[in-house]
Amino acid sequence: MIKAILIFNNHGKPRLSKFYEDSCLGNFHLVSKRDENVCNFLEGGMLIGGSDYRLIYRHYATLYFVFCVDSSESELGILDLIQVFVETLDKCFENVCELDLIFHVDKVHNILAEMVMGGMVLETNMNEIITQVDAQNKLEKSEAGIAGAPARAVSAVKNMNLPEMPRNINIGDISIKVPNLPSFK
Image (cartoon, rainbow, N blue to C red):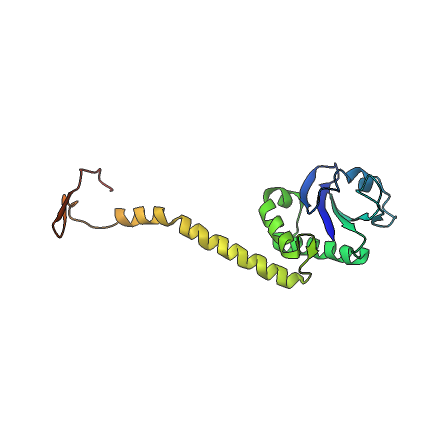
């Protein structure tokens, strides 16, 4: 099971952190000090969270992608998951960089939520993940259209050609007097 997903830059600033269990804190220094030609796995210990835990990471350009997992996860499977995550980010942001993670953190979390939920891997097919993210983006855009409805309603009222503003509204035996309102035009 995945316990945490962390993304750090080269200076140790966290750019994304998703914890499924509070046990893998402050592991940047363990990963960043390792040589480039060593493996991408760190076996458990007190610094990682316990003897059952492992850190599996990849270093891409200025970012470290670190997954803290227990012994039930395959190291190669997690490396493949990191690769799919990075490629999906790259497709969604068209050549992803650190600033994309900073300014679009909600979209990054949506992508991650399509892949991993509750520490369990849900989806590894990049095309399926992108399809779901695109559907979410369309939904957000349609909701933005709904949020803009009051402004469009005011604009429509301004563009109506009423000869004059009605002063009294009669509905059956109810009569409503309309106060003097400023002109919309």
